[in-house]
Length: 116
Image (cartoon, rainbow, N blue to C red):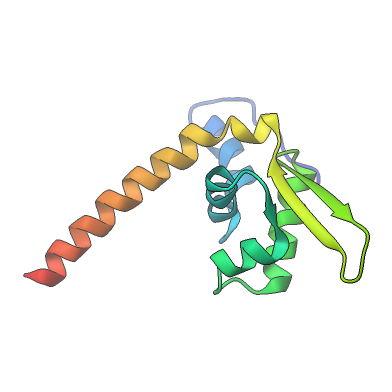
């Protein structure tokens, strides 16, 4: 899929980032690959049980097309597939780690609400 390159008016760099990591599971996939630098398809699926095989395959394909992850297929029955971040994909680490920190703060806030 051809991606639009924004002309960097205010807000456009954010839109450029979102078009790469947006999607219900893309940021979660990136987070998992930052925790475990090399992962098999099945390992990723176990980490995200609510994500269907079809959706996981689609999100991985889009991340690969965008140059964020690299896929390696090993022949066999069944074939084994590994995924890892590319050097370019690793540059998203500060974004994903900021999302992790915000999510932890939000979850703590919500737990306080339900505890009261």
